[in-house]
Amino acid sequence: MLETFERAALEAGKAIMQVYREGCPSARKADNSPVTIADERAERIIIAQLEAAFPKTPIIAEESVAAGNVPVIGRSFFLVDPLDGTREFIDKRPEFTVNIAYISDGRPVAGIVYAPALGVAFAGENDKAEKLLVDDHFQVTQRTVIRVRPQPADRTALASRSHNSPQTDVFLAANAIAQCTNIGSSLKFCMLAEGLADVYPRFTRTMEWDTAAGDAVLRAAGGSTVTLDGLPLTYGKTSQAHDSDFANPNFISWGSARSALERA
Image (cartoon, rainbow, N blue to C red; front, side, top):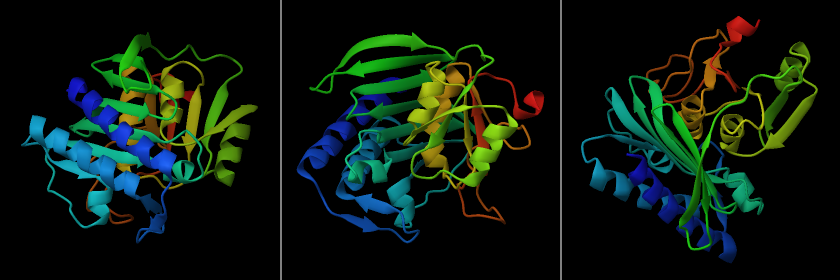
C-alpha cells in the first residue's frame, strides 16, 4: 500500500511544485479556507492512483468533500489532503505537504506525508516509520528508519503557525514546557516521529484529512495522538451532533505511546 501512496504523493508533489513556481490565484471555499488549482490537480492525481490500485476502497478527499462528493465509508477507507498548508503554499513558505492515509477500524494504520518544496517525505505502516529524501527529479534517494525519542525533562512543543490559540499557551504553562516551535501543516506529527520534538497540542479545528497521514506516521514511530480525555483519536467520525462529518475534537500528539491522562 505504501508503494502506491509514495507514487501518488510524488506525482502530486510534482504538479504542486509546477504551480508553486509559476504562481496562481487562490479562491475561498464555503468554510472560508483557501484553495488553489494546485489542490485540485494534486487531488485528481491521487484519487486516480488510489482508484486504480484499490477500486473498492472509499476515498474521502478534502476538495471532493467540499464539492459534495462524499462516498459512504465502511470499516476501511482512505483520507486524502492533497495540499495541507495551503496558506503556507500561497505565502511561499515551503512547509506545505501532500497527505494520504489508510484508515481501518477508526485507526490510521498507514500514511505518507510529502513536503515537495523541502524534498522530504515521511511514511509509516506496521510499526515502522521512515524518512525519505527526495531529489529535484522527484525520486527517492535515501530512506532512514525513524523513531520517537524518550521524553526528556526539558520538552519541546510544536504549535501551528497559522492556527495557534490561547489554549496552547495555557497547556504549555501547565506542563512546564518553555520551548515551542511554530511550523505549518502535518510536518508537526513528523517532527515528533523523527524525535525532534515531544508534544503537539491542538486546540483549534482540524479535519480528519488534515491529521490522518501524519498521525499514521507518528503512531508507526511509537507516538500517540489522544483526545483531551486521554483516549486515542479516531477516524471516520460521521453524524456528529456537535460538528460536521470528519471534524476532529481538540487533541494532543505525544512523542510516546502514553496517554494524556497518564501524564496528568
